[in-house]
View 1 (cartoon, one colour):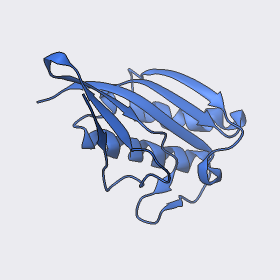
View 2: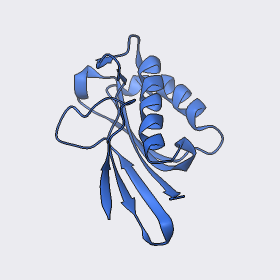
View 3: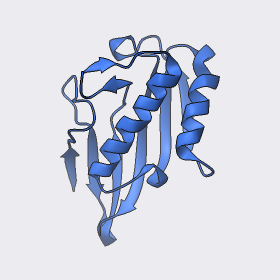
Amino acid sequence: MKSALHVDDAPKAIGPYSQAQVVRLHGGQKLVYTSGQVGIDPATGELVAGGVKEQTARVMQNLTAVLRGAGLTLADVVKTTVYLADMADFAAMNEVYGAAFGATPPARTTIAAAGLPKAARVEIECVAVGRDL
């Protein structure tokens, strides 16, 4: 069984998609698949000022908000996919990303993308697993 998730403290979807889908499994477990998040401030609907570091920080805040809506945290993330507008931004993104996930980061794929929504420098999606309380 799956259900769409919407939270107010992350950017609204800018197309026909959900911020996340929550899949409930047998035994009370759930999987959460987030849509890609870019560095949009949900209060303004605009990309945050600055470069890839500032955008990555906002992306991590947005992912945290979406996961919180499902009762999960970044510690529950098992896989991410990172899209970069330019691989030259990898080190700067990686610094912020690494700080957000700490000592046990999830599996990750990083891809160079020809274009991202709103001319963003970085977009990140994730899969998380947890239990219903």
